[in-house]
Length: 287
Image 1 (cartoon, rainbow, N blue to C red):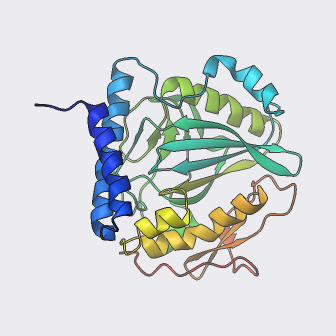
Image 2: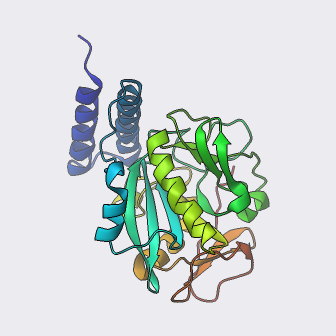
Image 3: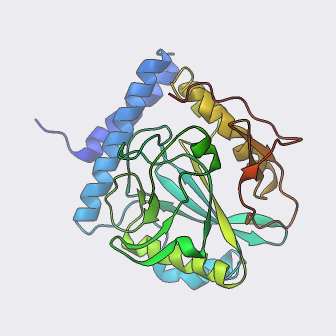
């Protein structure tokens, strides 16, 4: 008997909860979580191919009313956050001196596994902090519309990572990118181009393996990339606490962060230097 994708997804979710409840060793919980992510990916692809909406997609037809209800204006500076495990892309918009979350879009497809991109052709989507300027926008992408994340950034290059043209784009296929469907990327495009058109030099993109909570980090403790993820966490925490994009630096091959000043729009380039306040742990497993 073949189980439906929805049934497989439900079973994987139940197994994940049970595994935590009975304290199954982390490596087995990670395997079960991998099954859940795989089932979720297959379900989203099946819905896309059947022209069915993906669960969690905002009402794209009500764009203006959603902006109004959130007390936000088209053209306000934006910030993008990506979470692989949850398959979600968030758009945050500046409101006063802080950013507030405007929308969460389900990612139809992302490539590879949890963990950073290392080399050209590894079919892995990147993790880390990036900035996107006007020249990185592509209105005529073969995947409808796209923007280039700017991989490899200064941190990636410091670790010898290679590859290029890693995008957020439309459709539902990926060889190292984040595909959010044509309809969703149209709305995202409208927001990011309006922000740049109104004077935001570039917007910050924060790409994480998962929401950096204690529960998720405990689940993946001992994972090959755990130390690298802990290197990202201070930047995640800084934005969570303040709603202001952190200043991102690379210090001796490590991410380092300083809290952004109130009113900052996240357009500052990632540069070399060591933070004076928010610090990071070293990346000891970049191999």
